[in-house]
Image (cartoon, rainbow, N blue to C red):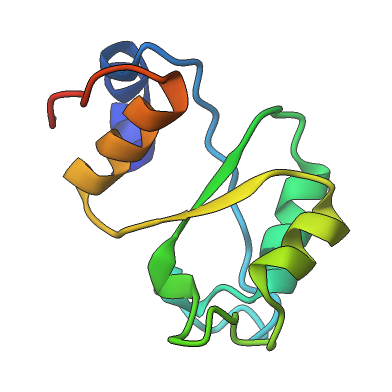
Length: 111
């Protein structure tokens, strides 16, 4: 869904946005939900990506202890990927709010 709306989202947010696809290698590629990504999957996708800037991930990738399926923490992902990584609450308005905060501006209108 985000891919088809990426230009509109970037325009509303006033930011340059790239989509990074993280493959679920940690579970053998069998999980289809976004919450099934392991920290190592995000590390690999971030390293391979030519995009720059902060990597936003859905917060449902983390358990209540702030750990991914493979027991890595956000700090582990940041250290290993060399990228700034931020968990964002799942949902369109929360995503737009996170983008607005990154821009340092007002809250963006939802799509």
